[in-house]
Image (tube, rainbow, N blue to C red; front, side, top):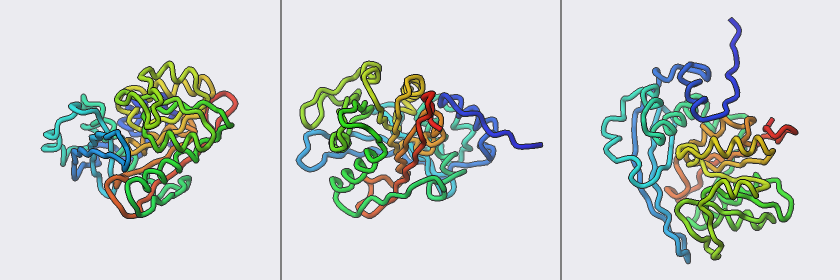
Amino acid sequence: MPHTPPQTPQTVAELTDAVLAGAHGPDPAELTVTSAFWLYNTTRLADGDVTYHNHYLLLRVGDSFGACSFEAGELAPGFCENASGHCLDKLLRDESAPVRTAALDAYFARVRPHRDADDAERVMLPTGTPEQRAEARDAAIAGLLDIEPGARVALIGVVNPLVAAIRERGGVCLPCDLNLRTTAWGDPVSDDMTEVLARADAVVATGMTLSNGTFDLILRHCVEHGVPLVVYAQSGSAVARAFLGAGVTGLNAEPFTFSQFSADATPMYRYRAALASNGAAA
């Protein structure tokens, strides 16, 4: 029988159901987690006054890693005690959204690693200090924005070097975050995503939106209003890639090892999709 290509996903849940149904490749019941990691790190850049608190779940499947960031208290370290040896189909049905997201990321990272993707532009983060590597990373993300001077860019998930990178490209940054109240320059940070989206000419969102329930809303808004959507992802980078051509117009994917965990040169992968006249990416 001829192979039927999977339908374009509109939500993370639809994508997960399609994977469980075998629409994207091997049965996830045949892919086993060999290692599980619960990571917590803090970062304060030189001369900065903000300490970033980051929690990650990492699931290794063969030669690839799936990753998801989560809020403090959302997932206990004890999860990892019994996670190694589980098949991905079980974790894709887990009650925890970060676990499901990390498992979905592990699936797509294993089936189609970023390093083997023909449509990916490989960008190397330089050997250097945290500040140098953060600036290079955020310049690469901002480089995916095709905006006119004065364009309003909603930044969903605020990191200060990315605020600066958007401004350097002529954009007006509209920052939104649940944990920060001001940027490094004293700009107020909104906690109302819908208000920020309503004013935006373009959107840049973190991969953490995949697990906290906001990605679907952002995607739908951008498709309905013809707004470009760039995702920068350590969390769920291979999951976000599945939405290229379905609302996501640019992706800066940073699979593990993440920039903050190394001082040596490490790769990122940039993807692009054009914005069609009906608002959907093509």
